[in-house]
Length: 380
Image (cartoon, rainbow, N blue to C red; front, top):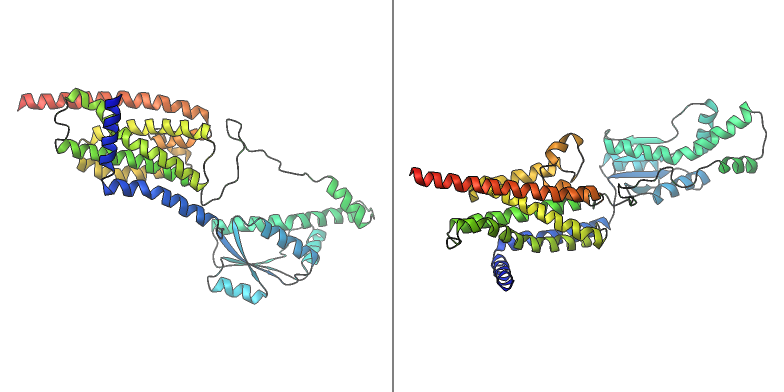
């Protein structure tokens, strides 16, 4: 144990003399802190110029309060006149403009009487896009409560012929409203799905890609040291397990940095879940990095493969988006299991199988490479 501790300290000390390793190790906490600060600022994927021609009208004030109170996705800019809202769209200061007319209530009640959806708000956009379509859904949801009550009131008066007072109608209408959410969204383990900031959502996936980058960089360092003859004193049969220890030294630092970064970024769940998953992920990344090293064989080949592997993992794994058609390919990479295991115990157990299968492949590949090397020496 003392010898292992000495080797760990010496290898760690040697790594910290590499500027490239320090740069890789320091980039993630800086990214986490920067994203956390950015998420606390002005948020919104779409900016909307909001104009109320009659701000004193009760309905307009209610809709405005509703929109501004739920502005996590949209960023509103209040305009005093319709012309100002139009100019903001024309000058690329806003993506869309919503102009609420002074007679908004009359228009909604007229649409209810006509029994059809009629335009009541003027929407100005330079182009049509998916975020803008989503913003219009938010606008419709803000208008729907008033329109729904107008349809209800017209139906009671015209179809049923009941002449009830405003207070009685409102009381009967509100008695049928459903309070709270109709749906409860949970993960497989029963934990609640919390609404998060869209800027911080992909950070866990980015951190996992970074940890794989660390183990691939460590594999590159190992091949460079092997090429320089640093391990020439060590028998070949011992180098296989020594390579795991070499890469494990890098991963021990990277795991700590990743956990701290998750904490700084605000994507941390709880210690009892994060620490075991991070350790299992480190084990999976260890066998993955060693297998890639054995398959590449030289530092030049591995260096050229690292960017390609990271791009493929960022594309197929659920880092930014989830594409189910890539599922067979996703199972090849440890990032997939770590991201799924955060909210699924089942994928945590799968990481044990991934480590076992990866270790067997590493052993077979190493045995095959040594056999090929002996055969080449005999032939020469």
